[in-house]
Amino acid sequence: MRLYSLLAAAKINLYLEIVGDRPDGFHELIMVMQSISLADRVTVRSIGVDTIRLVCHHPLVPTDHTNLAYRAAALLVQRFPGIMGKWGGVEITLDKQIPVGAGLAGGSSNAAAVLVGLDLLWQLGLTQGELQALGAELGSDVPFCIAGGTLFATGRGEQLDSLPGIEDLWVVLAKYQSAMVSTPWAYGTYRSQFGHGYRRDFAPRRSQVKAGPMVAALTHRDSLTMGQHLYNDLEKVVLPAQPQTAQLKATMAELGASVGALGTLMSGSGPSVFTLVSHQAEADQLVQQLRQALPDPDLDLWTAQCLPHGVQLVEQ
Ligand code: C5P
Image (tube, rainbow, N blue to C red):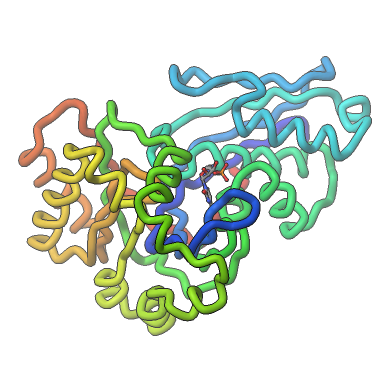
């Protein structure tokens, strides 16, 4: 097979708590991450020349070595010298559906798909754990994007533990096209505003984390209680900086309540906001109500299903 196509699922954060600064400059996090069916299609194809070529027609996505998908391929070439001599180079095509700069791990999911795809194309035979260790070198969310589903994430976000899934639930996602958040800005601003409360010693801080009720609700498959414990520390810096997104969240929460939604939260570093609902019909109803309440062509809306997996191979 000289070509593999993969679906690279977006993620939302059902829970994101910032514990403190790590010695490596990143933040120590406690998260619950969830894959959703909004996905990019990533294709890896063998080419005759020994090069990495990236094709993407999205105006905001670079196609050079600054793209995480390109860097995923470059990392494998570096770790497996001579691999392109054996199999040829690779053309990576990204068909973007996940909005860029949205807090949905679009770039990380693309890199995850390239690792999984090239493992197949170049017959490397890597385990999921080995792929995730390589992914962690590229970005904190890449290991999650490889495995996907519903996972408890600690450390930088790369230490993963399984949780019972919520694949029967749906989300309505919303984002103003013109709104974007830089993840380093969000974490840096959080540090400057709340860093005085950080703990250097994570052990006592960890014992004070507020994730317990969320994890218990997931374990008991109690989606009503789970919806009440959706939480994201980064809302504290992103929503005040983006009043339009703050208003969007308030409207989604209000209209969501009228359709029986479980809860509303900003995902990751934003600015995308999601409302969790139990059934597809509620998601469709909420989208309709949002379009009426906020008739702004700049507002993008999607419905998506919670998934039990991350990167998935598309049957050829
Ligand atoms: O790991 P990744 O490259 O996706 O992270 C992007 C940025 O988000 C980092 O440069 C850092 O500013 C911030 N970050 C953090 N702590 C984490 C994850 C990300 O401070 N655990």
